Length: 247
Length: 152
View 1 (tube, helix red, strand yellow):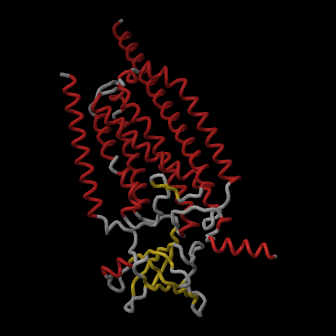
View 2: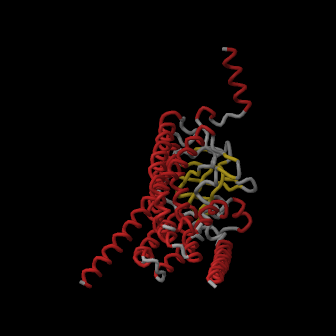
View 3: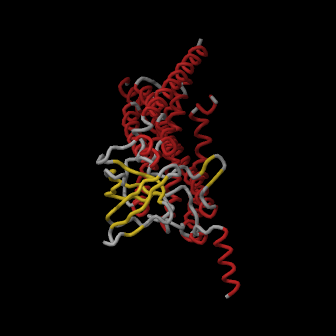
């Protein structure tokens, strides 16, 4: 595990992996969108609006997966003091926030024709909105401590990591909200190997989830690489400045 | 020595996580009534809701219960959850997905006579996604349709 904490070794894997993940993801999403828009039928009750499923479900999954990665990377940062963990956590925040917002927006567009309201304050919608706000707070905290984390010093960075772990409490709440409480949002359609989604909708949805996940992975790798490049530039500038002042 | 510090941090984090999850579960448990978006008919029967208090009522629209009143804009129907049922009256435009046998969330209040007077209706989609071709046909209907096509 410590092998991956070495930035050089990480880069030698991340560099070729990024385009593979990205283009495979884009291809899968394109296939699922083609199926979702042209080859699948409309739903018996919802009609054409069911097609938003192929964006909404992957977005919800990645919004939650993004924070889960932040929490795991934060634990690794705090316990094992891996220098790359702090960077991985920071790199996951923006894509996660993007997908959480996409989930809220597509859900709202679907809710108006289906329920008759753009927004309701039930357990599922509220906890998802809280997740989006947590992302914003985390990004602000992480930004404050970015230079410290990159220099391998913890301190402020530790606060961002603790926030990442504490915020993870919201993830099971989002997941269970429709089971614990009466809610406007429907209960889970897919539970332990059973699906109440017709296979004709389920297949394109599964492809979309996989495709968007690969794109998410590529985005995180890209951001990690750019953050590592920033550290290098900063280090080089610092050395140059020191050399200049010495001479 | 370094290994020991690492284990110490791991234990600390695991303890903190356990405490955090415990606190969250306790909070969720305490909120289980307040955080519910609506009352089910059986909740109203079991706990009783005073007339006039603004609440939401959620459940299934009983099949065959939707009746249009003579004025054309008032609908009366029965919301049930398998254990109890509440009659509802609503004046206004119903959402497209408001059909018999499907879910509904009504905002309004109980009147003195035990009828729920709704100001607003939201349709509730269930967890089933099915193409239109299989439009909730049950086996009998499919058989029947097959027979009629054969005889024609």
